[in-house]
Length: 150
Image (cartoon, rainbow, N blue to C red; front, side, top):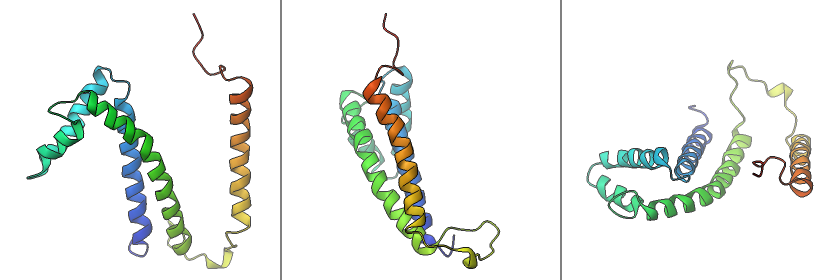
């Protein structure tokens, strides 16, 4: 941790952003559990001195969880993945500069190979192998994973 503060900090920010995306997505079905989940979690911000209640009402878009809250959470649920993608790139940049942490604490500089082209090709191959079946399924049998029709 002490040697790679930027990498660790971007990882924590990435984790919190992922959790925020999951939370605002949880609210989107707009059922009882979603409504009360949004009410309870957003009310946690009211514990912040001086600005807490204002922050909660700003997030709600009014004085209670209502339609403006749903609209804001939907917009956040759409926009946060783009922010996450940028944070992943920043995190990977820091990770490639400093190297990953070894749990044993043993330096393994003798075993290193360059990232490019070895791991770049490996990543491109993995991405292609995941994208190809997904695209094939979406184009040729889009209803395969859907609910059956009545």
